[in-house]
Image (tube, rainbow, N blue to C red; front, top):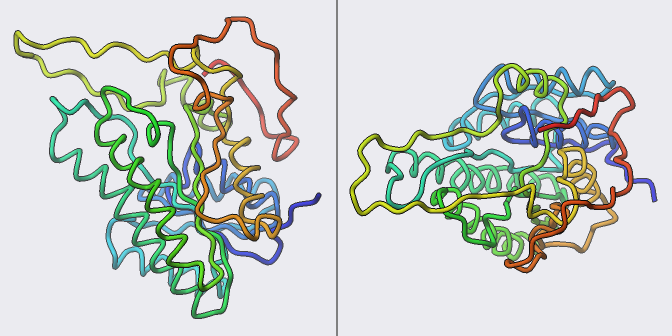
Length: 301
């Protein structure tokens, strides 16, 4: 089976530098022209450079996914340049946060807006562009294991990821009469594999956005526990490359009747019984199929 996205145009929001960049590269690997959106000019440009280094065609479209005029603007840019949008990947989101007792309304509102409002606005305007052109396209939303399981310390993230799970199903029903499919994918703490990001992480020492606790916690405060993602994975962590292969297939004609579904790319983490801890020694899975031969694959993160 040879997946091909030749002749198709994709728009990826939040396109850099980790999962979004990997998906954008994956779509280009299978033949799509890719518009890389991010609110940061440098992030969008870096994603474009990565695609172009491997012979793909890409363009940067900078804009805030929460602002409707901005969304209309960069959707129009893509349509003016390439005449169509066949694929939309709603990847933009904010990592980090705090628990319900300590989260600020400012961060809550921004996190929910980026993931919730951003996904809504991009889905609305890209879907309209598909319908007007008779395109039976594919829309894919980013979820998380936090959409399906409760985790302390990230209340805003848990809220908007859970909401997007049902947004995906409802939007799939709204758009089914037009032949447009809407699905989602759920990663769990993927290991970065973008060479530029890995180099940056080796200097900065981390990927996630950490929030320092308030200096004066009340006397009744109780610790919320800890998270051990790697130790509780039955298999090894996925990478953006793994996600890119899956999303590319999901946007191809081989998945023509798949809509309203979630694809889990997590090495068995969500399937695992909550009380089960996998053994430390695990068999290696099949070797990763790189998107391009010269993409450096480094571990340790």
